[in-house]
Every structure is written in structure tokens, then in C-alpha cells.
Image 1: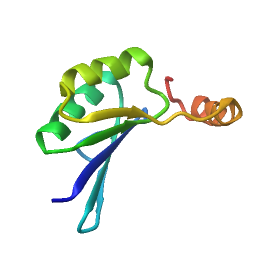
Image 2 (image 1 turned 90 degrees about the vertical axis):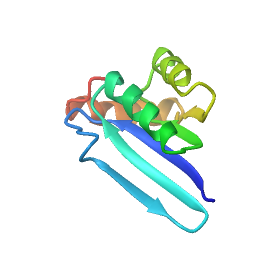
Image 3 (image 1 turned 120 degrees about the vertical axis):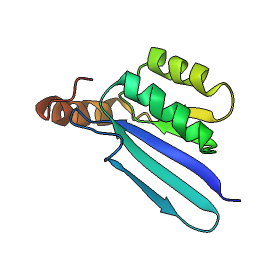
Image 4 (image 1 turned 180 degrees about the vertical axis):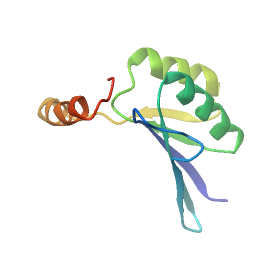
Length: 104
């Protein structure tokens, strides 16, 4: 059985049905899904856990409240983690995200 992980990221024009991919080896399966908002993130998280995902990594755009809501939805069936950068890295990417229409 492979370790199953997922990465969920925000994009203002995302369609989680369309914007997803899977990369896998015999022992590791990574699913990447883009979502437009928190509602979609919660639904995708619920689906991923039902599919057997062990770990969900969220992009830095998720707030503490968002993370808590997703943790509640997965009910301890998967670990929930957040990718965070240092201050300079966050400022660098924030400008690009603002320019490209990301809401967070």
C-alpha cells in the first residue's frame, strides 16, 4: 500500500474537477488539486480522505481558521499540514499573487 498525500492550493480560476493531477510511484501517491475557495477546499478534503489520503498539505493561503475547519472535516483520518515560508519569501510571492488576482 502506498503512502497517499495531497496538496491543495488556491487559484482564482480553479475548477477542482478539472485542475488536479496525480504523481505516483509504487510506494507514494501525490494528488494535487486546485480550489477556488474554502468551500471547495473542504469538499475536496472530505473526498480525498474518503479515497484514503493519509496527509493533506495546504498552500500558505489557508488561514488558521481554514485549517481548523479542514481538520474538523477529516476527523483525524488524515494529517493536515500547511506550507509556510519565511517573511521575505511570503512578501515576494504575495506581490505576484495580488497581481494575478488571488484573493488571499
